Image (cartoon, rainbow, N blue to C red; front, side, top):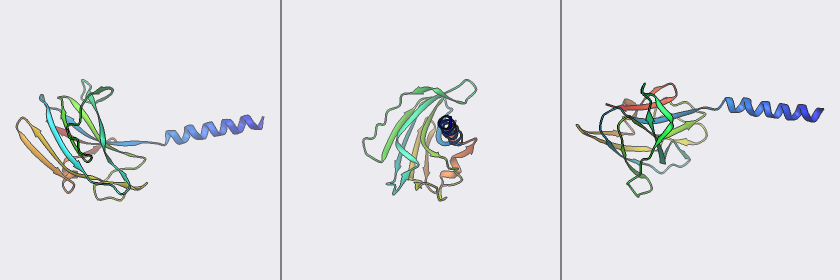
Length: 154
């Protein structure tokens, strides 16, 4: 009988701890009606990088939310280790990084678990011109809302 209660306790504890876990995503959302080209570089991280060289893209729902069930194939056209280049279709969201069990407030904050803000520079080419985002002006473009740090391109 004691074995059953220990097992039940262990399972309950695991479920409780799993429920306490969360993610915050860094996303670029293409709200425009044409493709955009994103080229960006990351720095070498002495720890765990927030931004990774592997990314995923998702469609938007009819209400403009991320449709996590509908991934979109995008291919990195930059073959260097820390450089990335993607063509992001209209009405799509590109996940460029995430935080696990930590909250993002700004690019200069200290993160738990040896996380490192390793974003260096991004160039966004769209039909009507281009934009440059750097580590220093990152927070002017990317805004946090409900656990998603997002830059929306119209």
